[in-house]
Length: 281
Image (tube, rainbow, N blue to C red; front, top):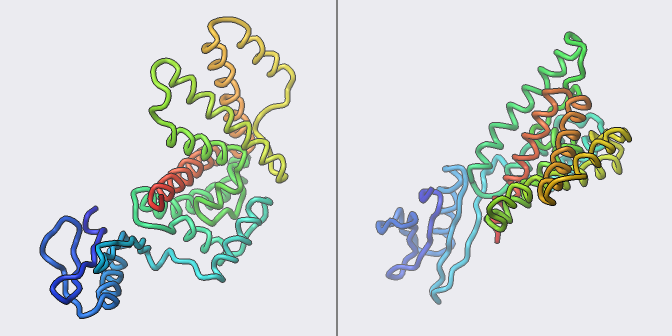
């Protein structure tokens, strides 16, 4: 949105604020510092954005102005880190840490992923609380009770799936268009399968439950699937089998609701990471 991109430029001995691509200044100021401060305030009132400050020499620098509600103080950063460690260990975190962790996902300039993440933080908490309350009624562990903390809390508590989805999303987003034709689908399936293998390894290393089976019969089925046909069909079948096994295991470990939230958190965190790397590149 152009309204979320402002420019501060020198003009006839003054400093003016322009909305991107609009010739008429928003305001005029006697000094660069006062113009920058006014532009920052304007962007903050709009939920954040980009500020380009042009110097008398012709050079320019870019400043990313975020939502003040998403900013983290040093104390908040420590609280978010403590909450993150607790979630990875499968422990409850204090409410301040969970709140700081929710805000951490919103750091950076305003983008579509940030707006979605802001809403998702609320809805993930609602679903997690509801799932915890319903678990005793339906007799199934839908999700870890007390999992407030938004998208990141779910992500860190379900690493076997969420981390794999995150890795696959980032890799595929970065390499889209690299592989085309019939092999493009095979490439995507292999990336997802490898990412899930890695995420299950990480989950096991930190003491979380894994979703990939260690049943020898399953690996016999995998070997059978990859024993005949063109190489790309064998590879796709093997990767697809790994993905299916991981997702079925995820449904048993996290419950149906937990599996959906784990996948959603992986996509959202991957989307935010992709947007942030683009914004600060």
